[in-house]
Image (cartoon, rainbow, N blue to C red; front, side):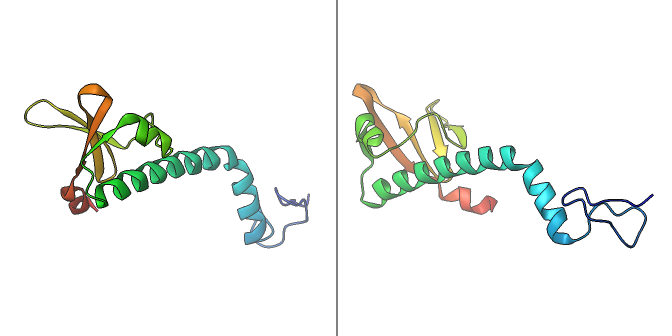
Length: 121
C-alpha cells in the first residue's frame, strides 16, 4: 500500500515513517492546523504592542499623569497588559512590557517606566 501526503495527497517516496512529500506540504499542513491559535496570539500580541506604544509615546513626551479618557481616545485597551507589579507602598501598577500605569484619583493614571524590565531580556 502506497502512503499519501497528509497535505496534498501525492504518493510519498523514501522513509516508511514519512507523512509529507515535501517541506512545503509539512509547513502548509501545520500552518493550517495551528491557524486559529496563531491568529489569536497574533491579535493579542498586536494589542499589547499598541498599548505599549501608546504608553511609551506619552511617557516619552514627559507626561507622567494622563486622564483615562485620553488613553482611551488614543486606542488604549485597558483589558490587555503583560503583568502587575505592586510597589512597597501597596500601589498596583499594570504594565505593558516596560511601561506601566496605576490608577489615581479623578480618573487619572500615573505613568511609569520600569527599566529593570530590560534586565530580564
